[in-house]
Image: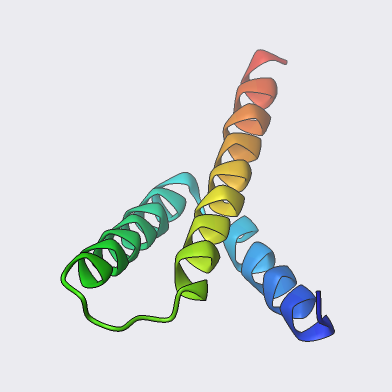
Length: 80
C-alpha cells in the first residue's frame, strides 16, 4: 500500500470522526448510492474503473466502523 493511500484513508477517517451520527448516516447513504451507480454502470456495459468498486466498499466499511464506535461511545456515556 502506498503512502498516498494511507494518508488518504487517514484524512477520510478524521473527517468521519468529526461528524455526528446523522452526518455519518448521510455519508453512508451517499456512498451506497455511489456503489449502486457503479453497479448499474457496469451492468449496462459502460466502462468504469474496476478499482472504484473496491474503494467504495472499503469506504463503506470504514464508515460503518466509525458509526458503531460512536454509537457504543454514546451508549457507554449514557450508562454512567
